[in-house]
Amino acid sequence: MSETAVRFDKASKLFGSVRAVDAVDLALPRGSLVTLLGPSGCGKTTTVRLIAGLELATEGRIEIEGRDVTRLAAAERRIAMVFQSYALFPHMSVLENVSYGLVVGGARRQAAEAEARQMLDTLGLKGMEARLPAELSGGQQQRVAVARALVLRPQVLLFDEPLSNLDARLRRRVREDIRDLQRRLGLTVVYVTHDQQEALAVSDIVVVMRDGRIAQMGTPTELYEQPADAFVADFMGEANVIEGEVIAAADGRARLAVGGSKIEVAMRAGRPGKGRIAVRPEAVTVLPVAAAEGGSNAIPARVQRAAFLGQHREYELETAAGALFVVAPSGAAAFAAGESVQARIDRAIWLG
Image: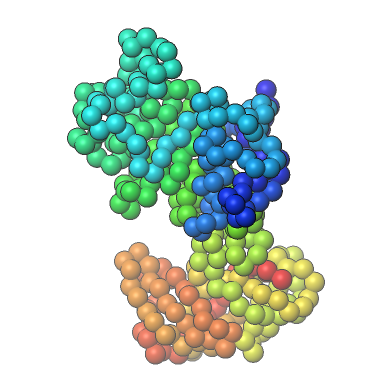
C-alpha cells in the first residue's frame, strides 16, 4: 500500500477562465494531519472539494491511496467530509444521524446502529443517542458530524473550516479533540482553515496556498521560522517586513544595517547584500533609552501605541527602519505612547 494518502499530479480546476486550482503537485503522507491554509479565494476549499469528488479536476490527475480517482464521483471514493455547517438532519436523533450513511449504503439498521453507538462512545457522546441536534452544544454537534463521517471508515477525512461557528474557547477545545482523535486512530486528515493559529496548533504539515498555487509546504516550525517569502512570513503569524542589508553572516548569525543602525541578530542569510528582512513581534525586546544592555542590537524607536492584553502587551513602534509591531510579556517593563525607547531585535528571517 502506498505511503502517500493523496497525490495531485499537476491538477487544475477551472471555472470558465478562472483557475481556482492551478497545476498543483501535492503528496500527502498517510496518517498525517495536513492543513490547507490561505486567504479567501486562494483555492484551498476547491482543493479539498477535488479530493472529495465534489468537484472534478479540469486537468491533471488525482490519486487516493494509489488509486486514480480523477474521474470518479464522490460516492465512489472512500472519503468523508465534515462541513462548516455540520449539515446534521435536525429531525433525526444523534444515533439516526450517525447511522444514516451506513443504512443508505445498505447496512441493516441494527448493525448500523451498533457501529454508530460504538463511534459515539469513542467520541465521548455516550448517553446522547436520543437527543436532537438542537439539544446539543456547538462542540457536541461538531463531534456528531465527525462520528457520522468516521463510521463510514473513510481513507481520508476532510474538514472544511470546521471551527468557524464556535467561540474562541470552544474552538481551542474542539481542535484539540480533533487532533487527539486523528493521532489515536491513525487517520489521514485534510483540514481547511484561514486561521494561522489553528493551523500551527493541529498540523503535521501546512500547505500555504496563494492564487490557486502552493506558496510553500512544510511543518509548522519550518514555515514559521523559514518562510519562503514575505507572503508566507506574514500569513504564518505576524511579521514585520523591513528593508536592510546583510554586512556579514556566519554560523547562524548576521551583521545587519537597518534604518541607519548596525545590529547583530540570529539569522540564516545568504551572501551579503540588500534585501527584505522579516522580524516576528516576539523577537523584539522594548528597552528604555538608557538601557546599556540594548547595545549594538538596538535601534532607536518611539512608541506609537501601547495596549495591555492580560497575558501580554502590544506595541506599535516608529523606527527609522519602518513601523514595528511588538508583543512583549505582561511582566516586562511597560511603556506608554509617546515614549522614546530602544527596539532590540533578537532574531530575524532573511527573505532576500
